Image (cartoon, rainbow, N blue to C red; front, side, top):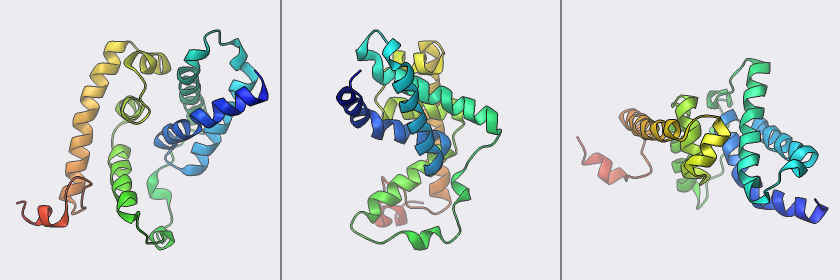
Length: 182
């Protein structure tokens, strides 16, 4: 693989791999490390892949396996709650503040879902992988992916409802709509 081809591959898949890593690791530095490690592994072993069309699936599978290896090694879980208490002061108000709040609520709800259900949900809806690609990445049958996705959607609805019950404004409702609800 030439340097230009490698650069093109990184440009094409970096953002989606980083988002997936962030959904797994739940903190930016670990997500960055996982993403970089995945591309390092591609640089050293990616040439063994015979079908270049499967590069995306290979990258996601490799990232997930690296996450599992790292988690087993460290025997720890990073969490969103590890952010400093004054982290809200670091957020600069701006025109996209609402979008960031909505994304934050969604990430909070996703973090409340068990990993076995969260991972297929993120891969399917946020990273647009097929059932088969998810099954290959996770090493489970396609039927298991489908049932986990079904269950994950229910768990996500419950997590969003719990956040709503806690008084947070959810991405799909306005302050006025919330006031008129029982």
